Amino acid sequence: MIAIQTPEPFDPIADGPLEPPPGHHSGSRLERVLRRGWFAVTAELNPPDSADPRDVLKAAEPLKDVADAINATDASGANCHMSSMGICSLLSRVGYGVVLQISCRDRNRIAIQGDVLGAAAMGVGSILCLTGDGVGVGDQPGAKPVFDFDSVSLLRTIRTMRDDGTFLSGRRLSSPPRVFLGAAENPCVPPLEWRAQRLAKKVRAGADFIQTNYVFDLARFRAFMARVRDLGLHEKVFILAGVGPLTSARAARWMRTNVPGVHIPDAVIARIEGARDQTEEGKRLAIELIQEMREIEGVAGVHVMAYRREHLVHEIVAESGILDERLNHAAETRVAPENLSS
Image 1 (tube, helix red, strand yellow):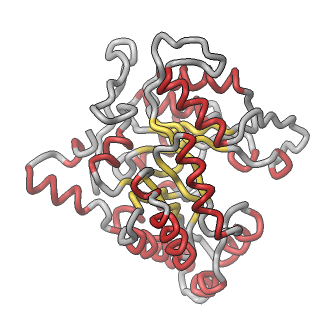
Image 2 (image 1 turned 90 degrees about the vertical axis):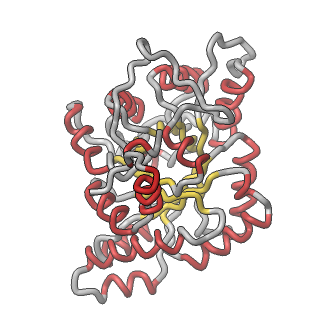
């Protein structure tokens, strides 16, 4: 088993606010790993349709040794599950690094700013700002969408709270939230020629890190990263490439048709379809993608997603070898691997 961290309970009252190291916006493990220059790993925890906290902790267990931070999704696909805030509360209490997701679809600016303060008070140090899928794609299409913000205006608002110490109204905050701000990007879907410019808008708005949607087309992703480097964005933001296992050719076709922002080349589907064990081949493909992404200039880490198959995330990360640098450093310096993210 690979170990890069051991969760330690955080008591925001006894321990006080997490003090950011010099040059950091937050005390989050994810920010510390990225600014240290380690190849970072984030993973997605798909929330349960349950009010039992044990369901969350059980799902997170396979991720604790391979993820620097766990994303708690916020009603992705416009389908209701346990809230991102609730999951972050549960996981942060027991010491996991977490990423709170905020979708602009469901809350207005008053509620969102309050949530940011509440999350920061719980010790949540990283926030991913999302516009959100439209309610029409979910299982409650009659819900009323809000969209008071989009992801760019949300980034600007939270950056104002953090850096200027004020609400959007201008009212002062006695203690600003110390947060590491993220946004999402879809590098492999049209309009391809504008994707890097779209990323630049998010960086100007305040994004410190980017998590991309699934990448299955390395040629398109390499072209995107070339444009990112031409604009100098790789020096201004940490980019984590999205990766995930395909469990079957049928699942791959469904994703390509039904999941917004996902492009899967015919050659990838043919490879999975021709395999004796399609699930194992999908896992092998994810490992190969991670290893190749590791060599692309400007890629600072990977964001690994496997819908309700968190055990596969552990296997993929462990077998990819991307944590070997940390383990070798630990051996050379005789530092326990679980302390490398501190």
